[in-house]
Image: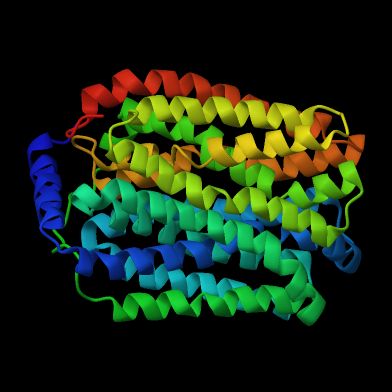
Length: 411
């Protein structure tokens, strides 16, 4: 295992530098990070309301439509570790500029050819950019010293804003521009993130290159337990979110526009719960690991309620609400704890945690689509996701002792 001395010194130096920054110099960083996470996260859900239209135009089935999510998150998984290593080596800003450029490139190219193979390739490119931006942005938030819990919460909350806007605004864009124009609009919007990072040059900590030691991360029980816990929070929330509109249309006979609006409300509520998680941790109202356990249990309960084959609106509202809270409130717990592990670089730890949490978003959407296609209901489609939740709950209870042993700053 790598020697803890240099990594610990590096982490301590970064923290001291961050704590001496004035709030005025931190504000532009938080704004740029939140803008980036917003314009990145719209791609997590923007295809959801377009599934019925694209099925008709492209002659694809529900399982193939689910691959649009799978290829996006496969790109994220591929990018997490290299992006984390590059951020540790060269700093977050260059990674954020390059990643945002990839997001724009993939999204702008997607509508040029109405072919499912081409669309999946472009989603993969967009995913690579999104993965790099996600890890580097989380690193920026984690490097803000005493402001880190709030910054991480706001950063995570912006992901929810983006996901919610992807569901809420895409049907309107479709009415005005068609499905190809909707994808093009979201792609061009990503240029704003590139501009933000080109302009925000001050206020960042002086970057100290950190030794890239992937083996140390792979040997870390904390990395594994945090990542597997994240299966049932971030992973679960995004696997289910893309199907909210289809679920509400099928289960309650709503129009596509109304269904997408209601689904977006559930996602947008996360912009309050992720910062709330950071505030609770900053004020020491609850510990990071207990909050993580609460989130995984709530996620399980929410999916279980949606899988019940009853047409009872309060049941759906309760299920979506539990998922909204459970998938978002522990976000700061996961990424701040990963950033402070002894002997593992911040970018490597956060990248590995993100990779380990990827199976839910990689496998979940096509599994949901396949089972819905063959059963005509969401009992097994959503019920299958509970397997990931059970793994996450178990890991969250194992994470406490592991993190306590490996952290440099305490839980």
